[in-house]
Structures are given as structure tokens and as C-alpha cells.
Image (cartoon, rainbow, N blue to C red; front, side, top):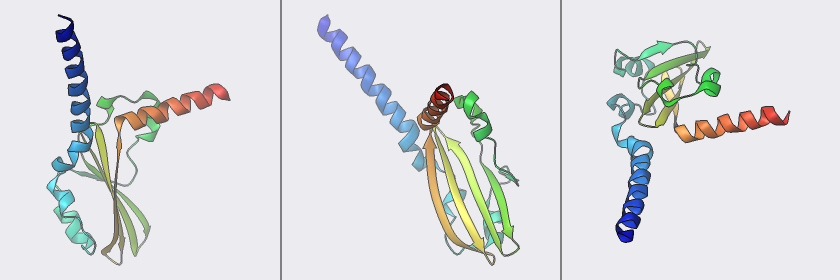
Length: 143
């Protein structure tokens, strides 16, 4: 009986850890096809035409930072959106963001003279947002 309880406990922990990794690191395989088409040298027009019609293009950043103190996983809607920062008439930066599982993905594209000059990708996980939230709460207590 004790062996069964030990094996059940170990199996439960392993399944939970594997599930968490599948919902974070494993999400790379489920990125939308529009993200695969983003490459250096693509024209701004081709980039905008390759985006799915349900992806919202906005002029301001989605308010993740404003909600960081009241953050829950459900706040991060599983939708993708594009933020446009127009630095000058010849230089535009787009930020493509979305969430899959527990991981939020981001692509930062810099267009100069109408063509993509650089592309950076990144991600953050739900646990990192919780860590930042804890740090900000501790910082408020210390002040």
C-alpha cells in the first residue's frame, strides 16, 4: 500500500511538471502561420496583408502593465494583436503579441523605408508575471 502511494505521488508530480512544460515551452509548435511568414526584408505592405483579419491593429500598447497588480491567467485573452509605433514617416515599429497556453509571445519588427530591417522575438510566462508582481508588492512594503 505504501509503495502504491509513493508511486502515485511521484507520478502526479511528474505529470504536473510535464504538463506545465507542455503549456510553456511546447507552445512554439503552435504559433500561428502568420508568424512564420515574418522575415527580414519583407515589405510593410506584404506584412500587413499577411496578418489574419481578426488580429487587431492598434496605436497603443495593450494594457498588460496596467493590470499587472490584478493579473490572472484569464486576463491574457488568447487573441493576437498588432501595435504600431510610428517613429517617423520612414521608420515604423510593429509589435505582434499573443498568447498560447501559459506563454505570451512577442515579435518586434522595425521597418525602415518600407522594408523590415530587424525582427526580434521573445516570450514571457505566467510565472514570470507573478514573480514581477511579488517583487512590486515587496517593494511597496519596504518603502
